[in-house]
Image 1 (tube, one colour):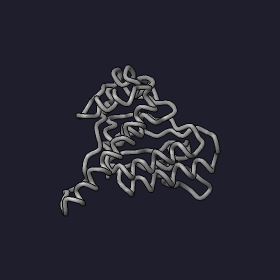
Image 2 (cartoon, one colour):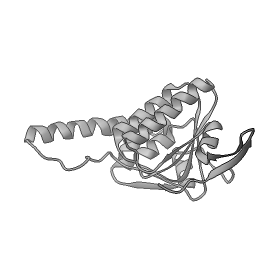
Image 3 (cartoon, helix red, strand yellow):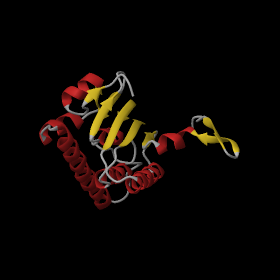
Image 4 (cartoon, rainbow, N blue to C red):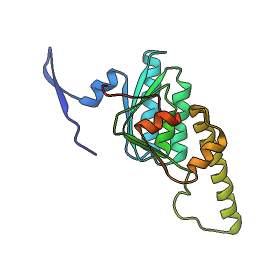
Length: 193
């Protein structure tokens, strides 16, 4: 993990070191950085739920710079983003790829920095596939269901038809910030936070 600086704050007890992410969290800013895993999902779900209860209806900002990761973990984050009842603004600060792209494009306001990129594609089979023919068939059926679920989400948030989405996700499709706005993956390119 990258070094995150502490901020010195003077209190009645003297100087305290406060982690910078804690200060930003108090401002309702959270971060989806690195691979999306069960741990990432757990942390983001807890943060979203706390912020929902802390100030119902107030906007939460999620910064995203992630290569994507586990689809079930990403869908857990997605479901909570949609269920908290607070608008969630997403900001792509580097790359939002694969499952991270789905999280990014599902924001209520979707902003990209000028050099950020989005990549969408079909879900991949995790790990090695082995076992009986029936086992492989079950995995393939599940993968096709997941493909449809992800494509439906992308379609719902971009206004593109399911066919257009499936055509784009058949291979890795990269969009720079301007292209992402054009295709409906983002709302605008921003130059200030």
